[in-house]
Image 1 (tube, helix red, strand yellow):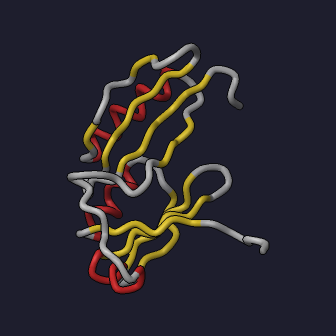
Image 2 (cartoon, rainbow, N blue to C red):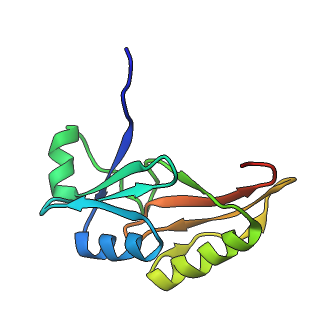
Image 3 (cartoon, rainbow, N blue to C red):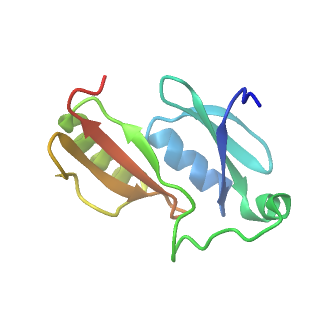
Length: 132
């Protein structure tokens, strides 16, 4: 098998709120419809589609995880410096996200934090010395 592309599909409650949040933290819009809002992330333009929960659930033939009790995946967003990590933290809170942890050192050469979007999806913002 040869995979041509990979992207993420996440469930949300409110497309307008999701669009506002991810636009505010700098994700690039990738279109929308009555059922989803989509963004491109990073230099490789990784696609994340945010579907309304009621639309996504029947298509996966299973339950959508309750993000109050767990997480389906944790995405990591690469930052270019510790200062950039700190700026991300400010912008995420300003946009309505919740910091799960404050920016901190967590091992030699590692600096970052965890946040949740308005629906509870978790992301790391991460700087690693020497990572280009």
